[in-house]
Length: 187
Picture 1: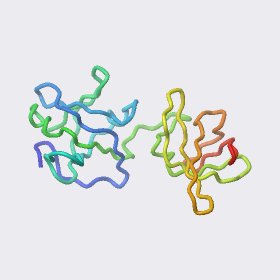
Picture 2: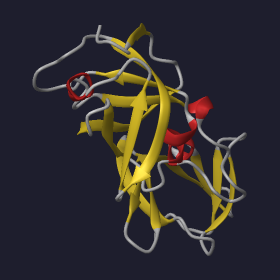
Picture 3: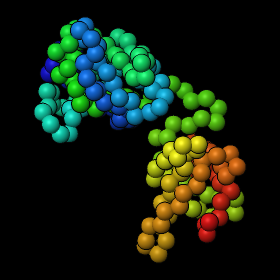
C-alpha cells in the first residue's frame, strides 16, 4: 500500500464522487475531477476511499482509505491533501484512482433539494395512482434535470422521461421511496 493510504473495506453505502487526475504542487496535494457540479460531499468527508483505475497501470490494489487534511476549490477544480501524502511523486501515484465517500458523510440536503443517488430506484406514481415505473437515471439538459424512468410493460422495458421541475413533480418522499407526478403514461 502507498504511504498515506490505509487498507480498508468499501463502506456498504459508498458512492463514487470523483477521481484523482494529477499531482498538484510539490507538497503532496492532488487534483480531483468531481462527478458533481457541487462537490460539497468531497469537502465535508474526512475520509475518502480509493479504488485503483480500471485501466492502465495500477499503483495500488484493493481499497485504500485516505484521511483528508484539506480539500478546496482552486481555479475551477478541486485540490486536496491527505495525511501521509507529503510529496509530488506520492500524490502522482494516486493518478486515476476513483474516489468513494460513505453516503452518511454527505452534508444534509436543503428543503426541496435531493441527491441524485437518493432518487434512483424510487417508484414514480402519477396523481391517478398509476405507477409509471422506477427512476433509473437522471440527465442534465442545461436548464433542468430530467428523470429517466424504466417502466416494464408486457415484459418489455419502456423509457419515460419527465422534467424534474415543480410543475410536474408534486412530491418526493424518500421514506416511502416514491415520487408523485402530474404526468400521464401516454405522454
